Amino acid sequence: MNFPHQTLTVALDERSYPIHIGCGLLGKPDLWRPHLNPKMGAVVITNTTVAPLYLEKVMATLATLGCPAFSVVLPDGEEYKSWETLNTVFDALLEHRCERGTTLIALGGGVIGDLVGFAAACYQRGAPFIQVPTTLLSQVDSSVGGKTAINHPLGKNMIGAFYQPKLVLADLDTLDTLPPREMAAGLSEVIKYGLIRDETFFGWLEQHAEGLMQRDKTLLARAVQQSCAHKAEVVARDEREAGERALLNLGHTFGHAIETGMGYGSWLHGEAVAAGTVMAAILSQELGWIDTGAVERVKALFLRVGLPVAGPWLAATPEASAGRYLELMRHDKKVSAGVMRLVLLKAVGHAVVSADADEARILAAIRSGLAAEADPAAIPPTGF
Image (cartoon, rainbow, N blue to C red; front, side, top):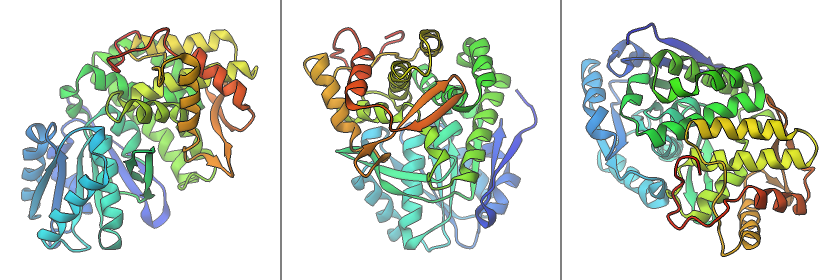
């Protein structure tokens, strides 16, 4: 499908940058040109899944621009978002004698984007980088806003930096090769924007859930544009998460506990966020802020796109599992002065950051949000 691409701006004064959304953007040199320095060259960092699909096209575009470039192909998977993989990137940059002006290009999903962004923040104390997200989740969330990080065995995204890209290029054609499970995981973050600040958008997603899963490009363009517009607006007001930006973490404190507790890569990030969001909704209901109908509405939309609405056991019993969740959640970045702050719902379309829930209520919400039985496969099937 061929329709005009859309451009949004993340407004951060001299560090502002565009987000281009559309089809065929990887092969449009004019979108790349303002953000590259051909004299300094570039390195395209991708993974073994994405490289066979899109690396050649990106390298051809760079050649058209007269920008010398080489590539680094990393293993694919959340488990490789680590110090060891980061050092692989640094080794390549040093071996090729890359300078501070060499542009790092992140071609891939959220793992590649986060890792390459952190590498750029660190290399010679700051090199330019470009985000080329190839998954729905990275197009609507992780590529925008400058959060970069790697994982630690004790917690997800605990080591990182705020470091903004020069450009985000969201080519919707890359979603054609995305596995259905990854597409569903991306929709988890899209749904999040409706829940935290836009009930009208949430209603639109309820109307078009099946069309989005079928990859209708017109629907996807609107979903990506609307999601990026929400995130750009929030980031422009609160770049370093001093306040409003924390709302973007709905479901993430519970979800990160799932990812860490199950082992990185067992559950996709979006799957863990979906189950975590249901736990947050249950806790919001326990506090008297939303009713059962709102909780069921959240569950119903996740189920329609094939996302889990119950979390896995992290121990032998639901009670022990809830305790393990709480232990892992205490490592979350939103814990301040020992107090756990959670993103909860006052209504569909209205989220708040709150420390109102005591430990007993949090544990009860986790138990209510657990699967009826342990899942030994650790991979959530559709409708879990």
